[in-house]
Image 1 (cartoon, rainbow, N blue to C red):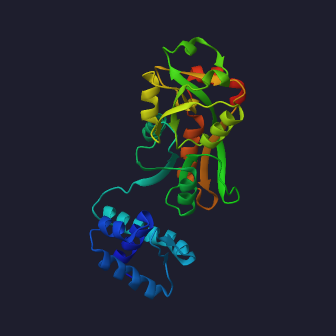
Image 2 (image 1 turned 45 degrees about the horizontal axis):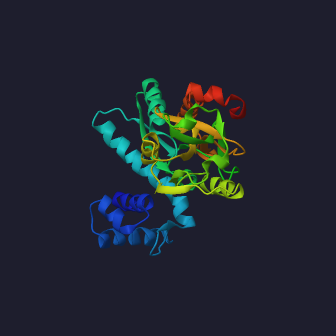
Image 3 (image 1 turned 90 degrees about the vertical axis):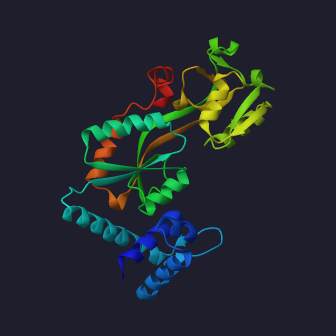
Length: 299
């Protein structure tokens, strides 16, 4: 078994595609495939389930993955020590794509000030992706919604975010405490197609007999926020995305929220994960004004 075979193996795991993996390790696809085949022959088992759409790990591959990563990590550490460089600790953090990057930046900067020797690697994804990466040990900890399998993945709640109506601060509704669903009939709306509460919001409006006019669909929050702040439409979004120039109001009879928290794989918890959890749990996740307005339901 050679080091290059392990690097090929990890490249396929991370990209889930033989062509992209070959590009990552700077070899041709036939060369990479031959290296993987040689590794599988030596192990006496298939490591990957191959299909046209995606490449995934077999049960043997899943068991082999932690060892392969350990070997590569130790090789890299040995190389650094031989060169007289102090090896750094590496923390792999995943975060849900709905979370504002400004919040993550503040948290990570604060953490790095107190742990300057820790190298932080970030991965952004959906709840399902993050849970899969935790199980595959591609990340050490994530900030996401509660896990689907609480038997394997630990969870510690950090905050609750509520779905509110966003509008430009200059809009006539902005001076109100709330609005009714009926007042939103045939109003222009920016539709966030990637929102966790999209289905629930759509069904709630439909049950209320309200038909908003969708003028733009997007899966990028910065686009939605810019359009709303320019007065080009309303938008339903989580209050953690509170932004200057935008007013957030509750809609009567609409009570939709999601919990977010720390997730980590029970079998691999270590001091590094515990130290990050301490910082994340003490971080101020929501603006003071929003926290005060929604204090009771957020507890």
